[in-house]
Length: 301
Image 1: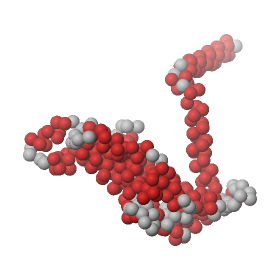
Image 2: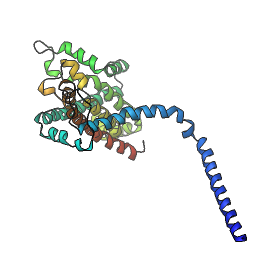
Image 3: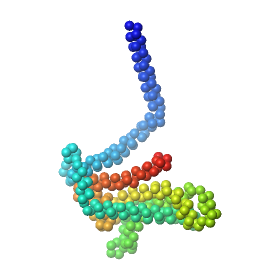
Image 4: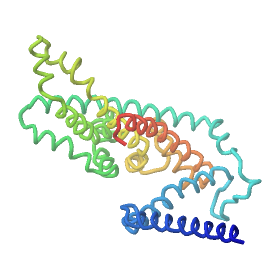
């Protein structure tokens, strides 16, 4: 009997100790920054999760159906979910044409904008006259929306008597070169002047100093600017629709974003448009994921 009582007493002591341990943990957790800030971040986090990630998930589900028109909602039954829309995108010649146009836009727009932005940043870093005014002039277009930029350039672009028909693609470059300039200028100003002075003492010219010493240290700025510019290029539908005022833009300027909107809102092929939207999402992730990995390796995340 005594042994049984000791066993029960020990079990009660263990239970009481575990309960106190949990109470201590709860008290510590309730006083943590995470718990105290919960009422402030939970609501916006939930809205973002539902609106962004919930929307991505719903779009992906629609792409696995054959939903079209406005008659009934999409059928999400297991027997109706397949990859038929993605097979159609692979076999659709127009998807390949718009994909090619999209890649050309990404490469040409990003490269030319970064080169122009780097050139402007170097000029400003050298302390040219009217530095503040030039910086403001080139940065101002970044504050404009795609619609305003498109309408502004539309006044100059006209099929019959436009002033600069051959420079239509310069509209996006004009708008975002100021952003690239600011990113590179911040990187240049973070480099100590000692390096430039040491290169001059060694007899290196200004051009060689920038090419051999300064520009190689702008890797982080280049990656950041390239990622942002690529994302904006993928969202160029607003600009093209404002420029041409129709879903069917000229063949040479038709990209995946315009094809997606045309399939959805003009032809009402919702599932097919959702598949194209998923492809655009994967393209964006292909750019963002390596960037996040790079930032993590640099210790910035």
